Image 1: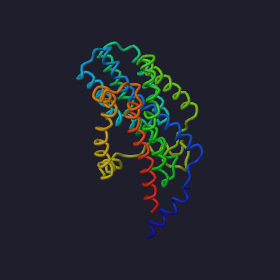
Image 2: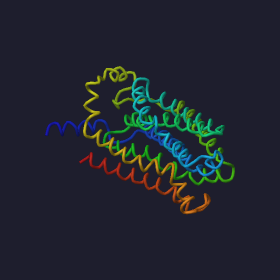
Image 3: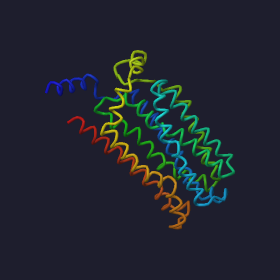
Image 4: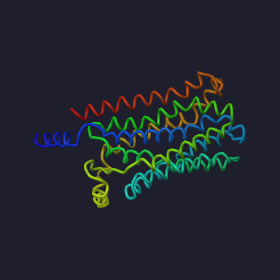
Length: 300
């Protein structure tokens, strides 16, 4: 009983509201999520003209689509560990710069190997994004608002494709598929500039500035970390992510092709736009709803 009372007192002392600058950070990382997943989905949107121009077989396109995940998980583990040392601000700036450069490099792709390489590099750069973004966001959130706050941040990864699909599809049809990659490269570069100017680092202790907590964070030992890695919560989360990303991979790479080649929809058909956009929108709404439910359960 005393531990429960102490926990509730500590939560009250920490506050239950997100600070104004906390919302600024959430907004910046929301925008990063928009860019992250729109960078992923653009290949599927441009798949038909890319396949025709580069004379790709179904197997080759499948390799290109799936290659995004070849280094995704490995880089996620390595780079997020590095972010714990050098700070999330620098790492996120580096990651977003990588995405922008890859999108610009795609403008010059004229062969299957070159296209494959761009997607492998993009996946290596995007893999660490979510974990690093969570690390950057969580310290700005009180415990009983953390799930919803992170849900708002993650909502960008769903609403981004939903909102950008009509615009990118129009550009692909009217200007050419390379124009869509150029637009996303420019947006990514702009985000990096804003992030470097505006963002601030805040560590796990919400009451302490960076210089007071940085040394303490470095003293964390593997003996403290390993039990967390192999805890039930983490293991179940890994299995959940494993199952989810099967669907995400299909949605990213094959839904647009299915709608065009099997259902015979045109890229400009409203049903095509809806078929590609709505799954992302529904996913985003589910994120917000379940985040709010998780926070409510936390307060019980």
